[in-house]
Image 1 (spheres, helix red, strand yellow):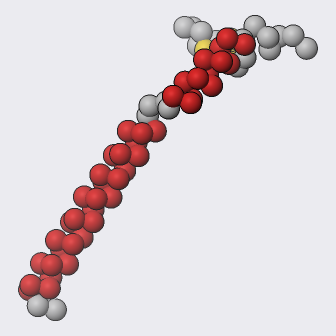
Image 2 (cartoon, helix red, strand yellow):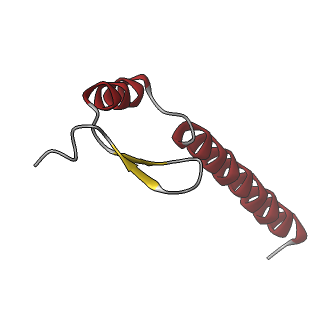
Length: 69
């Protein structure tokens, strides 16, 4: 392999690595924010008193309808 081939391979790997990092950053950014559909879904669940959450003390708290059986 010539020196030029080695440099070309190194540059290609560096570019590929940068693209993969960019793709990962984009994915992480997209996954860290709820979509409008997710916001609507959970807003509806809160309206209905469904689900479980945590109090400020770290205790589980239940939606108002989940205690009815």
